[in-house]
Structure formats: structure tokens, C-alpha cells
Image 1 (cartoon, rainbow, N blue to C red):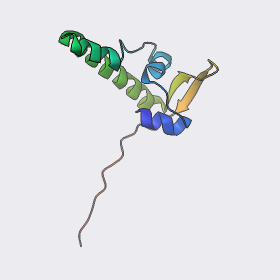
Image 2: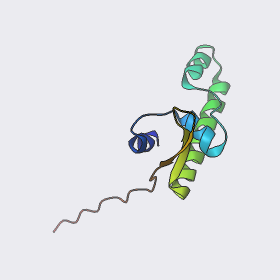
Image 3: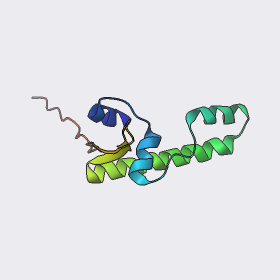
Image 4: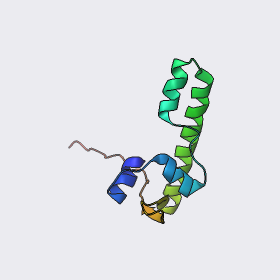
Length: 97
């Protein structure tokens, strides 16, 4: 997902920023927080974080697949449209003759 966005923009941005602009809500936390929770034995918090992270990723993907773009704020703070092509690539078929 982020590789497609990076190819379109020419630089890398955070999924959290794309989610906020595209679907109107952010991820619940970040990976470093999950590491801290692991060290503290807070497995349920990690579980909830992972489930919500996958949900946000799916929503951004589905939006981009349907609309052909996602949104983010650029470095000047302006909302930008980022063209994406999340369409599945058909598997190559090999025919032996």
C-alpha cells in the first residue's frame, strides 16, 4: 500500500497521515507503543492495536481501489490527491508447448 503511494509521490509518507486525510480517522497507536506494551505484558492492547491497524489499512486500500486515489496533506499543509492503482495484478499464465 505505502509502496504504491511512494511511487506516485516520489517520497514516503505515513499510513496514519493518509488515513486521517482519506478516511477521516487515524490509527489507534504506533508500532513503538506496541513494543512497550509487549515488554509490559499488555497483550490485549497489542491485539486491539493490531486489529484496528488492519481495519484502517483495509479502509484506505478499499477507498483507493474504488476511487483511484488517496489523500494526504503535503509538506505545506495542503490537501493533495495521490493517484494510486490498487487493482490486483492477474497471475501470469505459462503454457508449455
